[in-house]
Structures are given as structure tokens and as C-alpha cells.
Length: 189
Image (cartoon, rainbow, N blue to C red; front, side, top):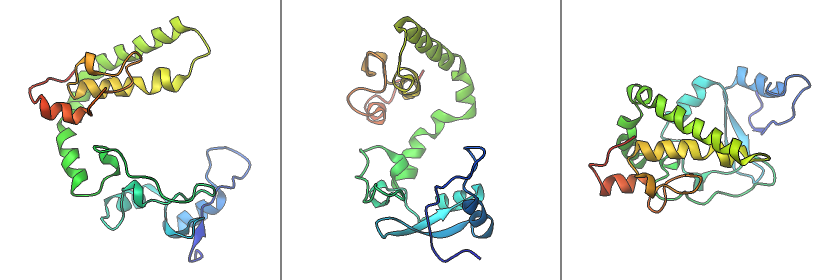
């Protein structure tokens, strides 16, 4: 039986750095959904295991709204401000499904297969840019951020000139969904 409440477990045992703490493994086996005490006194939940996490994510009693979340780490007490408009990953129903429906057709397996060659070209272009720049270089800003941002802008039909420059790290000005609503005939990549 697991104690009624636990605190976030971060102490690691020697060995593989990717192994979870032994106590977390024990809790996961006994009670995959366990009350969690946050450093700021807030009570939340510790969900462990793929099936349990999927059930939590689908349960409307839990929220994805960042302004309702509390940080489980000491020193990060308090809540997060609300996300920018259109950041639907931090929205609950009915807003989240509405935004998701707008994008679902753009992210099918068939569509992603069609985009594979273009994504590979974008990745190669950024590798070439990094090589020309020479080192040291920040891998996140030079590669990890601009590639998905460029692909998403192209998926949503944002013209190249409206994408942020010079590293092309996203869509400049209005968000991509606003662009699609204003230009319904604009094609994707």
C-alpha cells in the first residue's frame, strides 16, 4: 500500500541515469494514480505508467490549462500565466477540440509521408547553415527550433516571406491559424 500522499521523487539510485527512482517504481506498481503534495501546499496527482497517463489526459476532471497548474519542484512555487491565444495544447474542451479539428487534416499519416522529402531538405539546409557558420553553435536555436517551426508554417500555408527570419524560427506577425482563416485558399507545403 502506498502512503496517502507523496512528494515528488527526484533522488536517483546509482546506475543508469534514465532509470526512475526506486520509490517511484514501487509507487507506480502499487498505485499508478497517487495524490501528490506540492511544495506550495497544493495537492495534485502523480500519474505513472502509459495507460494511467492516457486516462488522465482524456478525463475532463483534469485540466491542461497552464494557469491552473502548480510546479511540483521546490523553488518553482506558484502558477504559470495563461498561454498566448491559439496555444491549444494548454486548453481544455471545448476550445482544444475546436483548434485540433482545424489542424487534424494537415497531420495525417499520408500527409506526413508526402512531406518527408521536404522535411529532409529543410533539415539538410539547416545542417549546411550550421557547417558554414562554424562552431561553437547553439543546436537548439540553429536546428531544433527552426526546423519544426518552418515545417509547421509551410503545413499551414504561411508564405515564406511571412515566416520569421533570418533563421526562420516561426511565423512572423499573426499566428498561422489566423493566416489560414484570412487566406482560406492558401496551400500548404
